[in-house]
Length: 434
Image 1 (cartoon, helix red, strand yellow):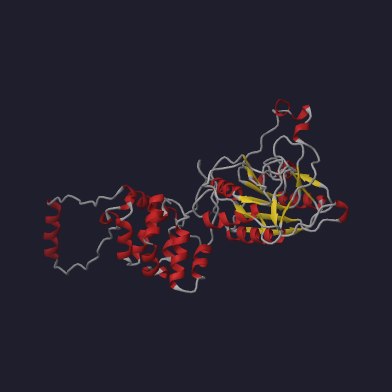
Image 2: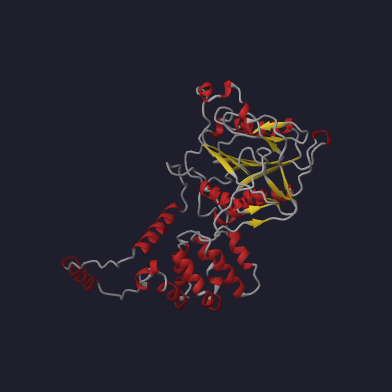
């Protein structure tokens, strides 16, 4: 949202809280894509009308540039004109309220006429030419009108793949496999991952809300992880648009030539992320060729801990408690010790996997922090960003939001920054079920 619009909402917050009737806006804001169903439910959960209005304003400022004008439009449509005019007259980008109100035709019943009168009227109509008066719209209203018309054209019609965005409209959208390793065998010398079940529950709910078929597998050994990925690659993905794999486990740094890192089975044996992605690439899973394959990895990328650096005062770090743990494991092989066969020139003839995105909870080589009470920083933030922004933003934009939010956390003086490796060819917009 524009900064000027945020200031208007803040300046007239009391007027909004005291005068707004939020119940008449829910369906309109949902239909226009301003809020998701989860956000509407959160607002409705507030006990009083004023509390609902407060939450609505709080959530509204987090939405995109179109949120403010669409909010004004919804106010007019719900006959809350005085409040809409108050906000509209003080917002620089939407001044001139008469030009921003939708002009709707007035339907009147025609009087009955004899056939002779009708013929006279037809002749008069034919011989007299009247200029058509078209109301002048502001640039912002023209943009909203064109977007509304575009949504209307898309309604009821299958959205085809384009140069800009992947096709993501099948129902269900695709398979989502979650592997959640919590309890590790004693001989592995790997600690129990407290808080991981919270992460798993969040991801299961989130991807179901985005119309994926979710399967959860818990406490898998290395061989079983490979088996589940192999079974997923053997499925027929032809009816679907996407495939997602989420792995919650301990991790380490290993040699690689494409995707760094590895995740551990509960037996202490790891599977390289590069091998994980290979199960679903175009060569081994033909029914996913040209379709996005998404991997979300909550695991350490190595042992190194980042203490960060000093920043200006406008950055407000979020300090976590004493319950933070890492998913770090001693490094099994450093990327600095790659053999000559791993140099780029030696691998130039290998095909580069396309339509794959691997999102890591941390930068390669660094630890990843997890709160034993509320789950990992990365998954908690990813879940919230998807909930609040999936209806309006593409995946790449949302992952940048995740990076920004996680970077503001701090545990015992240490920092964390997620990262992702992206070979997607287009924007990706998730479905949001209502």
